[in-house]
Image 1 (cartoon, rainbow, N blue to C red):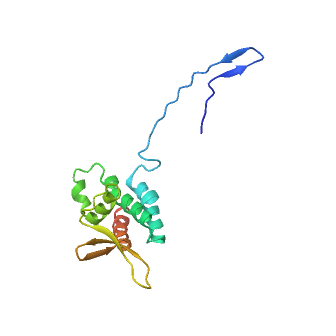
Image 2: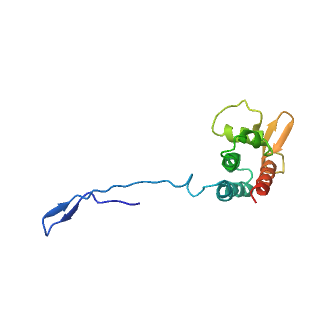
Length: 153
């Protein structure tokens, strides 16, 4: 952390100097060191996915992976006027949107609802549920990750 002296005393000379310090803060990048979709994907999304895959019942890691993966489309199609239409090409786009948005807005009425499956002698599995359809979040994220891997090679 930088600090600046408000006054400098030189007792031998009997003087006090009050320096004038001007600080200019500039931001040259969009968010920390991420400045494009490829960098955001590699440094943020992939790391969140890796964290989740190593602990696939951790809800916090699932939410972080889903939020960052969902927003990748905004980075990739940033200035594209057909961005909303193109987002639909991402596998499970509505399911991912529901999960990512539900994490910041409490709205219990969504198309896809989060849940889990817990069976005797089996590990818990995080899921998204839509009517009779049950999607394992880990499987969904792998498929979405494969899509972006091909697009961002």
